[in-house]
Image 1 (cartoon, rainbow, N blue to C red):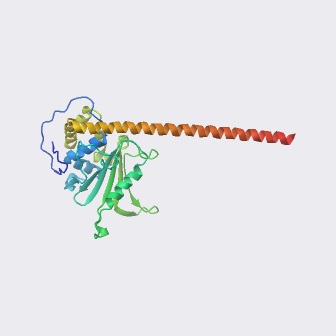
Image 2: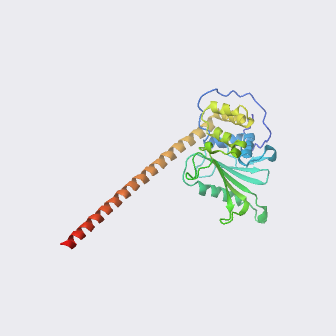
Image 3: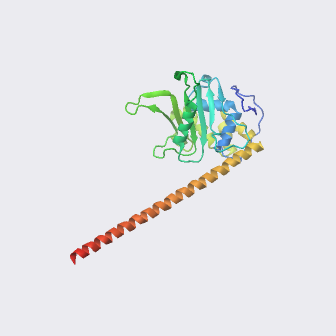
Length: 292
């Protein structure tokens, strides 16, 4: 298992296997959807990062020679929510930029947020470089909610197309969304690349679930062992718990907003009904007056 504490670790070979004793049962210290744990896992274990990207991009392992996180953080240090510190920028094969982020709380802004990530990474040219040299950029969101409830899909990909004839404008910009809540909608192609298994990994909440997935897959075995090692590091546990507190705060905030909107909607409906009643009474009075 890869146990490299350096934030710049970029080894791409299957790591040396150490003996790691993972609990047979019980809850994980935080859910795997925790975005800090997600970053810590992929930053600590390059082998797992490579496996995840292979599945997300529908590529064979042999096609990926290197994956390097270009915006590493010091794991365990306090994060600043004002900065985009938990989205992960990856340079793949020295010629393609990939942005990954785990999103747990639906803040109703993912389309705009993902576009900001995409645009920020696409603006990469030096002052004298030719525009043709710009690298392809892919933004992939792993969401613990359904982005478009009217059009649910397990794994969806978006590109810039002509609205009339669907001609591709450029293949250098791409957005993808993995809906962790809709594994039931996984297609045969999704299953072929084990995206359903990756989603099951990230939605796991117990050690039993991780061990079940790890039985016949080295990537998931590595992921399970790395998560267990991370769970033993006090500073990382503290940051993961801080993120859980943040989620609870945001969910409570979103619920308060939803309740307030619902109350306003009810009052608006009541006002409309009162206005309609007043209008009806006025009409009756007018009709009565005309008869007199």
